[in-house]
Length: 296
Image (tube, rainbow, N blue to C red; front, side, top):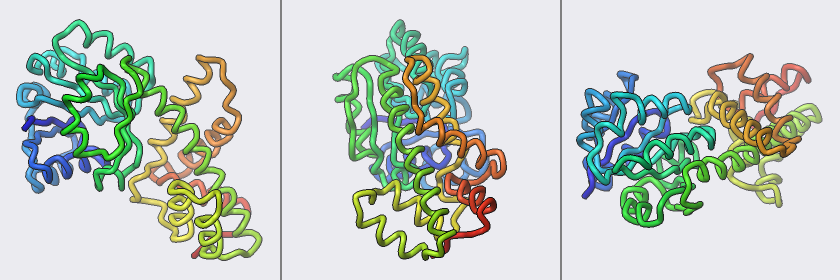
């Protein structure tokens, strides 16, 4: 079996680790957060002292960091993965970054003897922990097929988007423009119900059994009516960052995203007032304006 490395052991990377270890892959990880490293070791992971150690150990490395700058640093800098991985090893970029950033990383890697898969994921904290993420994989088909056993440990839905780096990130940008818009539409509907005196449980029953019922809508509404605004694994900072990427891509291509742009304003407001909250914290911003809260 392949030796697997993970760079980034946060909400998502910790789920990768749990499922890889449960599938008996030898798994080495690295994170700047000491608690995350201790939790990783406790479940059977091997702690890397440096990217160099991790690169020399790994046949496949998942890079799950916050943004394009961090991805560049981890993969391309003088101590980065491309200088330490073995020949024919594979980097799987699961972070959500700008498509152009992924394309540029891919352009550098193509001149090495290392493989690269641009594969952002969707499914959030629950999907990462349960190994049920959706992967949007862009890379050579033969490389993806060779990596399937490892990818299947974290995902039950692997879509081959194309062969060019950046294509996976482009699909993710489209997806996040939709998900962000659904979140804010659900939040506004919840606020309307709260002001009108409708109970949260009633709204959830109707929404979840209607044409609007889906995991995105249902989970958002459940968190709102149960007042779970922190610690749900859906940081407002992450979606805020993702929507910036979506809108940046739209601007570059000359595509008007009216709904996602409106959603972005609500995420701006929520992140400004409650920077450590989760996506549903936007509800509190609106509730403070209307003077009503939605409870189960």
